[in-house]
Length: 336
Image (cartoon, rainbow, N blue to C red; front, side):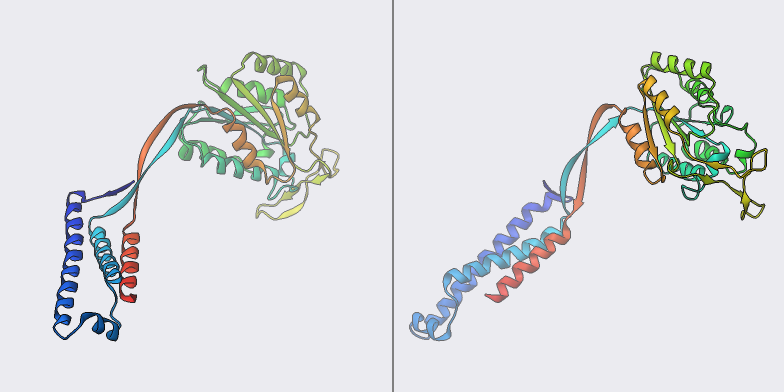
């Protein structure tokens, strides 16, 4: 819908355009009277190849329209539309991130851990009303935040940045998924809103504490409002070595086990798939890390509920269109 900032003067534009058109017709009539004084008007018009009355009337309309377009620019023409904005329920989202030594393998660039952190950070930049938590785990799980937070920049992302390659060497060896699940479930609040648990791991070096896994499965089956996503990362088709970095960050050989053998890692999705099936969750594997952001986004948006709709007005300045139309009408009038 077309609106104007100074709509109270719109009548003046119409009146001015009409006055210009009538003045043009009056001048045309005076011109024809003047030409009659020189003889027969029909012969003069034919000899001089003057435009006929219909052409002159159309030219007058074009001139009036061009003047109206220029005048409308001064009134601040705008195009008004209404947009609907969906209000969506904020979720509780807990990221459980594997920080075991195998996450430093570089089959995913720059490595599994850094790629996972980068994609989580990108996703968080798109969130607004959600409350976030982060749990890290290897042989044992730790919650890095005492409570869920909506302060993404100062709390969540700063905490996430503390998880670096040095961190993986100070946590207990192994990948205890059962402990990670149990601790992550305790991070959620008791509120009845939707909750999403995203556990990301390469599935390597499982410490299968069956009692913990069984307890986690039981709790997940009871808490229907908690949705579990097991995300695997790393190439399961090849064995990858884990670079050992010196103090300057350069690769100085590869990580070795207690017997001095080079450690080779390959993701094993079988155990994670089993847990996802038992709990009604989903297991998704990304061999390259390139699909992580989309996987995270779909996992979250699948459970987001619309709680309301807001409509707001959008005004777009169309002065340049009025000016362009005025120039077109003026060009047509000159060409006739």
